[in-house]
Image (cartoon, rainbow, N blue to C red; front, side, top):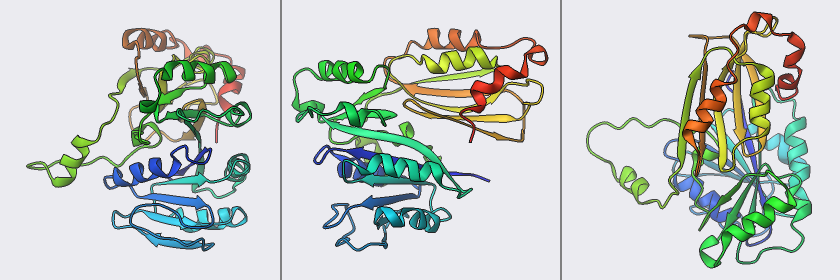
Length: 316
């Protein structure tokens, strides 16, 4: 059964959360996105108007849904959305809610849902003084409005000082490629470009590097060491891992958003091999492929099953 990722988007007032959501919705291209807004009052999402009503749902023309809820009703709303959408994005409006929402999603017993990480938006033009406590729960930081500052790299360095190793994505106008947060539905292009295709070409996305790796069984200790020390600029990893360690011969689906990491076990539907896609900016493709190749285990049947414990810590 496919599990629906639930991604929490948090940030200070005015950091660009709603702009980012609008960008994801306008660029959904057939991916059904459920947006849950924890707010009261007017919610500025294009093509909809929700005047602070709890448990209020509006259908958007592109197949997406948008809702306004109270935190206490969040789990109930997620249960209503899980069979209707491909991904759920929660906008946390306040400063205290992100941790509570993340805990609620993580604690959910709904088998159709899985936590997809917490994305923290930071306003580069109004860089907050008390950022450290909010960084604690961030898996990926989007440093937004970098077009309005002279030296965004200095702000990114400050974020790294406050939370070493957290991936920092520079953005303007909330433009974040959906592929960095979730898997968009593949589009079939038949014949000439459609109007939607032309709009997509006009989007001012950062050009991301993509690294594809295919291999055999991986050594769990060496692979986890690679994941723990991911290269700077690596924002997303997805794919399937074969360990083939005694007692752990299932397929392990790997999903990361920033520092967030999750494995899911399932049966092998086809060829039993490791297939990974890594997405980021400024990546040393050759070095990453070499590091992953060094994780390949020639004798998986001889690997101590106890070495899988670190992997199992991140297994849903």
